Image (cartoon, rainbow, N blue to C red; front, side, top):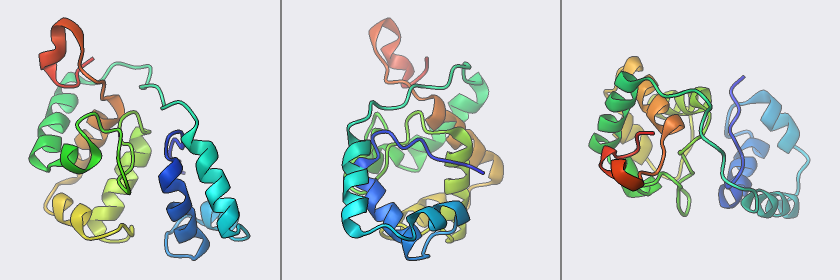
Length: 159
């Protein structure tokens, strides 16, 4: 089972849990856990998650080829426009930087198939036509993304 890193997803946790509670998103364990939660419970849980530190990058170094292909796809598909250049997320767009790679890949697949509900059709549109390997490279890049700084800042997210 793929599971999201929930830290810093505070503002998005309540809407996501609402969708699970109402049976509009598919994930049996999450639907079961959200079933009895009140709207106040969802808001309290969201506030608690918002106070957690952002997730750390994975301990292993990224694969250079996959990382480069994913970086190119992120730019071509305009990911930084909605999710911020550092992929920290904003408003209803979630943080993508350092999210679990398996979770990102599942989410990308589900959006492309139209089985994951979002707040509009932007994700399905941006992912249309991407091959499975391209989704995997994009997920790899986002999971390993690091904000550029220092003498190698021009490498746009490489660590």
